[in-house]
Length: 376
Image (cartoon, rainbow, N blue to C red; front, side, top):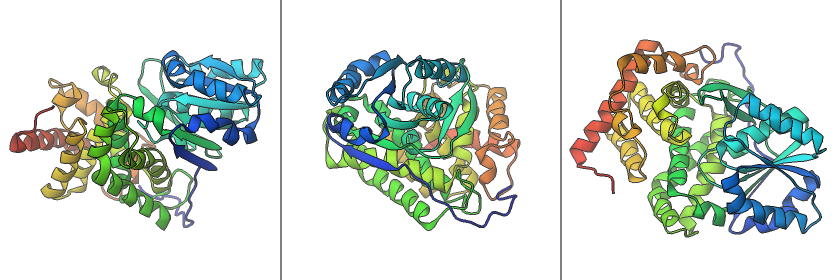
């Protein structure tokens, strides 16, 4: 149930500094110099070619001694321990995450284990992980493991929108799938403690609302700009919504059913190829069903998701023949002790969540039939 400890204080938290703009990586030394001069840089081989070499050039040119550690691909405890050992061996004085959500969550945990500061340099706008003081960890198999919480948010978040614009548009869309849940979840968590342990503030509610406003206003336009690898005002606005507004909004506003159902969905092996935000988008439809919103409002969200090619039913998720027992397992995991679904100020049980998942698929399929939508 919400707020079992009867918390009354309101709390808002954020990264110390957020920078966003084209070619921002070229100025990395200016913003990271306050953290140290011997960073452990986490990035995978693909990201290294996209932005790693440029970042290292900018830092070494300013006198930094950078040690690169190749990220293995999964934000697991095993990978964190391996990378932490490298940081100790190299006497790294801070950690840089260069890449997507799992690289970022891994780097935040490595930095916390090492007792060092962390800088986040995302190469996609695919999640709201960069700004938060928590990480989502997975088992090596890809199944959700746990949330890990930290005493403070990242010290610096540096977002180069030129790099973001070269990433596949699917990543930007997935970020919108993650971000569209922000306001939907937070507005149902007003009496539940947030990730900082306090009640949501008025500013966190306003941030969630602004995040949603930007997505509906600019989401499709930004998605098309990303296809053209163009940095435009619409792209800048959506990158900020996906990264900063959603990050602040979820952490200080709260999560609910959409992300709990996402976590449950990681138990279906066929969904492991989907991005975090693609599953959260469907989880958002499930929450809207649980919230009992009017059909017109449900249609509005489904229409937005389809406009940026996010999945709204089992077929688009890639599980057209999913079995009821698999969906019930998703519902059971979503209702596990400590899950964010319990932030909802309403009666929740496995049967209700199982029904909402099936009803969300039916609603998405019905909208597609009614409108004649086809993927372009």
